[in-house]
Image (tube, rainbow, N blue to C red; front, side):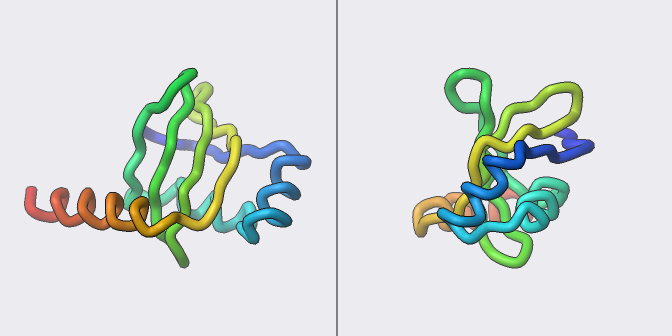
Length: 93
């Protein structure tokens, strides 16, 4: 999956920062990295497990190469473990 641009509505941006302490710049940096694990979830959305400065879980929809952010939050332990296993398996290839 190639993400060309990351977009977010202003009210979602404020909610994510106030509730989870995650800045838009962190989300953007994390999604534009190649080092991420993305899975399709219900209703056509995607979930990304990634690490830039810290581990983040990001839910978004895709349209014409643009990721529209739904929510983002610091990853839980099981999400970090899943990401690390996926990266470890990719390194073996």
